[in-house]
Length: 148
Image 1 (cartoon, helix red, strand yellow):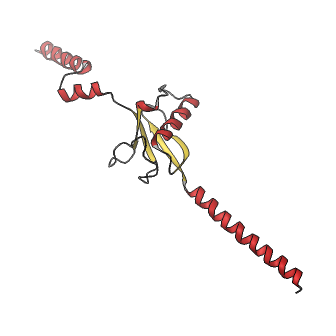
Image 2 (tube, one colour):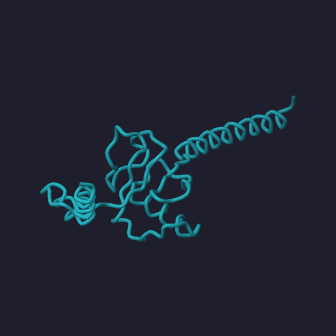
Image 3 (cartoon, one colour):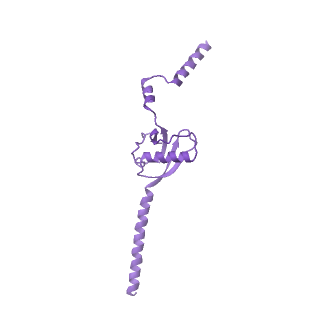
């Protein structure tokens, strides 16, 4: 083999090595993305889309709400990301903070819920009956009176 052929051969080997490292880097980038499934209460089916492992929960909620609206799903939801919380589908986990990374729990199934306002929580804690509960108690008491 002459000198010119050796240089050409060694150059092509360098290119292959560089290409291999580039492919490995691309695989690492692709592996940080994964498919998540988000169930919305009252909706017919789940929303599925690909996210980066390091995206925060607020960004995922925003994307889910945009896809939900784009698909024309019912019931119609607000576009305010602060009025929703994202729960991992496993019952052992609490809701994600808006700044938490989506890949921090290693879960791929989530439930999107409306955030309860503080007034409703305090009414439940105080033990004050809500309107529907009062109506229900009233209707049961009428049935008991009518049956005797």
